[in-house]
Image (cartoon, rainbow, N blue to C red; front, side):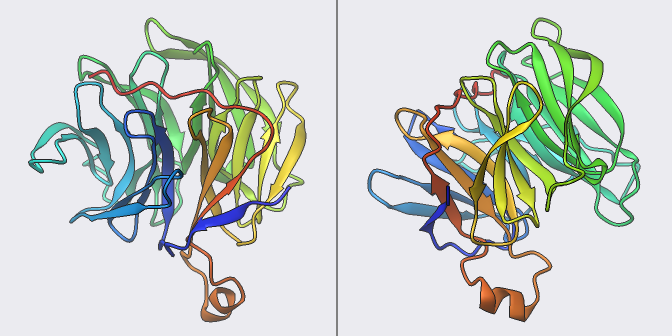
Length: 289
């Protein structure tokens, strides 16, 4: 199976893609381009909203607007008035870390993790932003948080610290938002790329974008990779099911750290791609804070 280009947006670093059922659009962020994008698959129309800060991930808010994880803080954003409400700062004591990958759990909390973008040290964390806007640290000792997503019943959280080349699973308590019983779900030791952003399908599979791997793979409930989608650019970053039936897998990509020759060879790098993998996804909950 091969992904096809649907929007030649040439993001510097596309990430954080999700489907918003309220407006029937795919949304994602260009972190280094400091912009939010949306795409309507029914019409092919798209929008771009330039921001002053890097948005690392975001999600629609049930009360309206978005919850936004900037590099150094989490805020509630009203996109009409541009008014922001600070929820928390992220690791202000460590100038080398920033927020990175995140998704909402089935109860509407935002689970978002950080990375050390200077040294790569495992000194960042994963936090949970509750529906009451309380903030709890879930995981410590993180180098580059990725792949955060939740099983359909909300009782398993999947996660990757990308340099470890594995996706792990935690037992997740939907009532308390706590994790336990960490175990390896899938090894990427023999894969061409590193585990980046993930989402789940309705049959229990975890779909993962392989950074520098030219592909998106499906990890079956058994932990084995059982399907591959070829992506015609080097750096897939994140994926999410969308469309009215949640049967299209949308894939963001990056041009980050690609030299001139690589971009000449793959000029669609940074574009939005899509494939129809023959399985449907599970809709993310809005942020309920």
